[in-house]
Amino acid sequence: MAWAKVGENFRTWSDTSVNAFPTSNSYTITGLEGGQRYKVLVRAHYHSGGPGPWSNEHEADVAG
Image 1 (tube, one colour):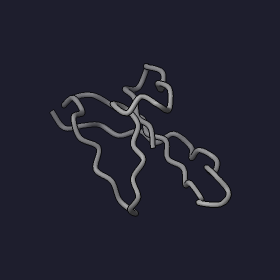
Image 2 (image 1 turned 120 degrees about the vertical axis):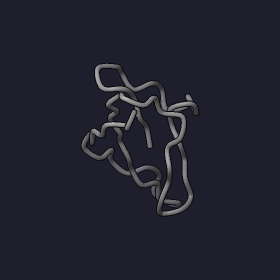
Image 3 (image 1 turned 45 degrees about the vertical axis):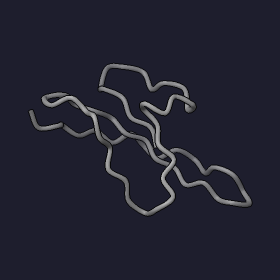
Image 4 (image 1 turned 60 degrees about the vertical axis):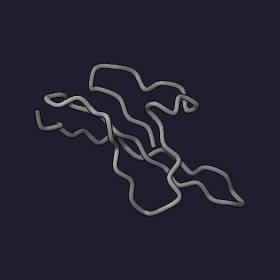
C-alpha cells in the first residue's frame, strides 16, 4: 500500500512513512493532514508468487 498527496509523486516502496505492508485485510492510514486530498495504491503480496499488480489510483479528501 502506498499513498501521497494529490499532485505529489509516490515515494519509493521502502519509505515506510508513506508505505505500509499490512498482514490483515484492513489498514488505517494515520498521520494524514486535514484538508488535503490523497491518492492511494494497493496490491496483494502472495507468499509463493511475490507481489501482484498495483491497483488503479484512488483519491479521497481528509476532513480538516
